[in-house]
Amino acid sequence: MGGRSVRWVLGVMLVGWWVGGLVGWWVGGLVGWWVALLCFWATPLWLWELNETWPTRAMGHLVRTLPPGELVFIQGTGRPSLSWYGERLIQPRPAQAPHPHHLVAPSE
Image 1 (tube, rainbow, N blue to C red):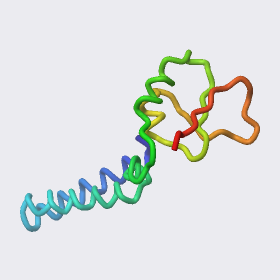
Image 2: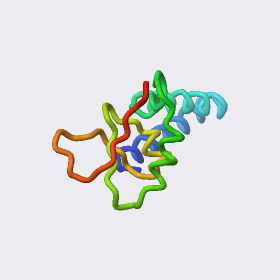
Image 3: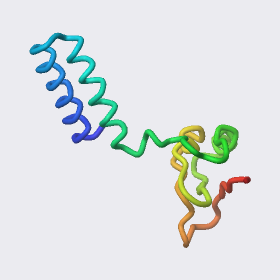
């Protein structure tokens, strides 16, 4: 977790503690929960698998069988879930991709 994230978490905890002392711990917990949700929605992480057209679990398991030194790219935009299931960072294919490499292409 980066320094900025730690500051956000500590800030949310401080606000929850302050609000909880004023009006009761349950209200502080409720406010803290909503602030945490708003912070989560401000990041691109909550869009992880919304509105995607092809599943990545099976392809991720195939990528995981490759040796660790092999380069793997994805055609099109990146899919964080593919990196998760493949247990390695899989980035979009650059214009000048090094050879040899493996390419994951969605089957639509």
